Image: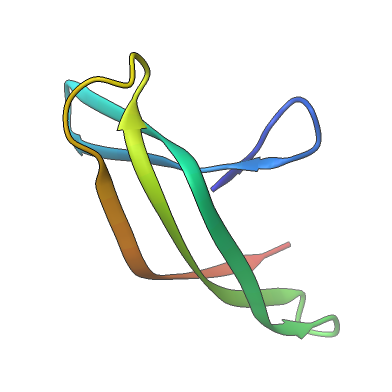
Length: 69
């Protein structure tokens, strides 16, 4: 997941060096936010497809993240 120019979050799935798929739907959940340690943890899932909307979609499930700031 990365911040976008418009203040929302976007996700991208790159199963190979020549395949780039973007999220068309999904969710992200922050499960822990330690302000003293400056760490956020959470989970995510999304459905990804290529920019043209052709080809199979990929269902990304059970994703996790840890961010320090």
